[in-house]
Amino acid sequence: MTRIVYLNGTLLPFEEAKLPIMDRGFLFADGVYEVTTVIGGKLVDFASHCARLRRSAGEIGIAVPVDDARLLAIHRDLVARNALDEGTVYLQLTRGAAERDFLAPEGLEPTLLMFTQAKAVLANPAAETGIAVASVPDLRWERRDIKSVMLLAQVLAKRAAHEAGAQDAWMVEPDGMVTEGASSTAWIVTQDGRLVTRAKSHKTLPGCTGLALEALIAETDLRLEHRPFPLDEAFAAAEAFNTSASAFVLPVVTVNGRAIGKGVPGPVTKRLRDLYLAFARDTAV
Ligand SMILES: Cc1ncc(COP(=O)(O)O)c(C=O)c1O
Image (cartoon, rainbow, N blue to C red; front, side, top):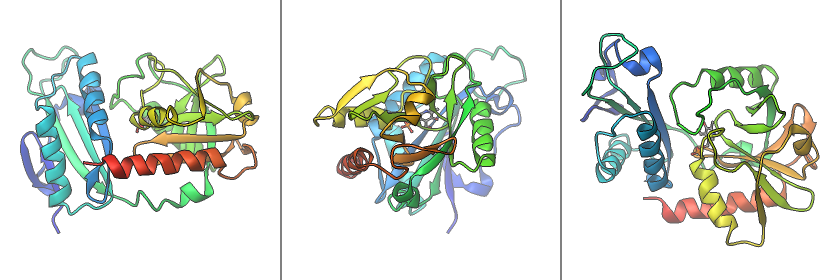
């Protein structure tokens, strides 16, 4: 089966999709992206990803060239044409292609690219075992709330985590506070059962999964605190977990080789994963 991708208004075979070498996404990381998960051939939390795309693009002055209904239609076409049951749709929007200059010419046509990636989402062994996390310095810029394609710091963070035998990195600021995972939102559960994650700010990406989970938590007896936490607080926590569109709620069982709580996925994390899974299934479009 030929893999079909979307590029600037057209669905076409993967091999035929070509971008100019002057694309500003390639030369300047002048663009933004989104990743939406697909389960059972349907898109999870799609409206939230659309809203974040528009916000990210707006913050750097790129106009999204299609409306939300068209975005949904393209996503659905891609899922259908690639017979995708489980996986992700990756979307990248750049300022477009022009002769290399820091200042882009007015009226440049943006580049809109989308492709699917098949992968098991629901049956994730890491959700059963939990993952190891390694801490790394947060080397990023001051507008981490924009989902920029400038991901070098995260690539280096993941490489360092991999070398340390961990599956993800938690990025830590010079003040000792954890900002977030290299591609996830970081959470802890205190010994007295409070959930702690950072409030929205320029310091972290507003995770769609975390946002949806917060609404689900509000319907439970669990207490949520929005504040930064240091690594030492994570070491003393009962549980820890990450949230992200492609892994939902993923237990973190060690940080820098130190067991969190009992060193196995905890009951609060499991409950939240189940809550999110039900939400994902019930609201996918
Ligand atoms: C830095 C960062 N934080 C948080 C997240 C989680 O966001 P979402 O739940 O929308 O996937 C991601 C996802 O890629 C990310 O890259």
